[in-house]
Amino acid sequence: MPESRSHLLSWSYSRSNRFLGEPDDYFSKETNSVFLNINHRFSKNIQFRSGFSVTVNNSEESAFQPSNIVDGRTVLRRFGAGPAYYQNYSLQNDLITNFSTGSIQHQVLVGLEWNKYIRGYDYLRSTVSLTPSINLFNPVYGASRPPEFDEAASRERYDRNTIAIYLQDQVTLLPNLKLLVGGRYDFVHRQNRVQQLDSLGRDPIDDATVDRIYDEAFSPRVGIVYQPIEPISIYASYTRSFNPNESQTVDKTQLPPERGTQYEVGVKAELIKDRLSATFAAYDITKENVAITDPTPGNSDFSIPIGEVKSRGLEFDLSGQILPGWNIIASYFVNDAFVSVGDENNPVDDSLVNAPGAGGSLWTTYEIQSGGMRGLGFGGGVFYTGDREATLPNTFKIPSYVRADASIFYKCDNWRVGLNFKNLLDTRYYDSQGYFLLPGAPFTVLGTVSFEF
Image (spheres, one colour):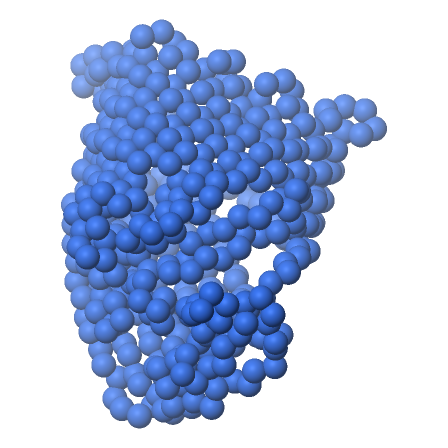
């Protein structure tokens, strides 16, 4: 079995000219991941593959957080602190076999997936009544940490265990006509454990409350592909999805699982055989119980559900190699994402937060293929995001923007060194986070050194 390992070292620089926290605020995070893949072919028609992964993350924060703005200049703040962690273990096993029934060929995949996800943190928050505010236009720093966590102080842990079985059959009815039929059944067990702490966030003051939740769901999948000529494929698909919701309401009620239905039709064309392809697709997606940030000031750590949302749109993608060493990735989309079943917090027909009506990107790189400069490469591109609604209910839009990025890299044997330049023109843009906006990253330089063996 071939094996590869890589080590990555990175550093970055960026600048920003407005900060509404305090100079000694901090957020630290350490992530470690391990991946193992095994592939074994028993015979020409039987193959087994297995993938195992582990990700462990530990973080800690101590920061003043914007909560609301009054009189056009005074920013009310909350204070949040505490350690957090998550662990994700995943194992996926697939058995693939090929056989024929008469003139019809089958590729059958049978799979078993196991996943264990653990998330925990000390939820320590102080309300705006204990947290000093700051002037938006003339910030004066030096506020002290609030004396206690008066909003909430709790130690919480959430465990989720998932077992899924799935089966699909890719049937070749004719040399140019294929049908895929499959399904997946998920069994999900969750345990939520919450224990209240004292106002200093240190010692438990009561016994832990434990909630156990069980969900299961079947998700079918059907698709068909027809090739009128060899470089053109026309396809259609129907898919159901199931996603256990990790979000909670402010009263710590677990949101029900998110369910989705997707219809898609499209055309894929090979413009240059085995090198450059283009895809045009139209889709209609419906989701139920989608979690969004609670818009109530002070509740941004929690979520509320939307009864139903829809997303309809068109996508165009172009990717591949134009000439040796010259690669391109281009895309453009138009999208209408809106609330289809809502309430007073999520009015029907309002657009979803941070869902632009249009967007696109163009990214291209060139790597020198021969001579003394072989392995040296350059890249550049532009990214466009259309205007978006900032809140639900819709009250104002975030303006559209165009961002330009670039890169330079050098590859030699198993080494790769690179510099990435994000937001070259220092474009000012924003993203919505619940009920307030965050500025996008300014001009940033990210350097990386990696080695694979």
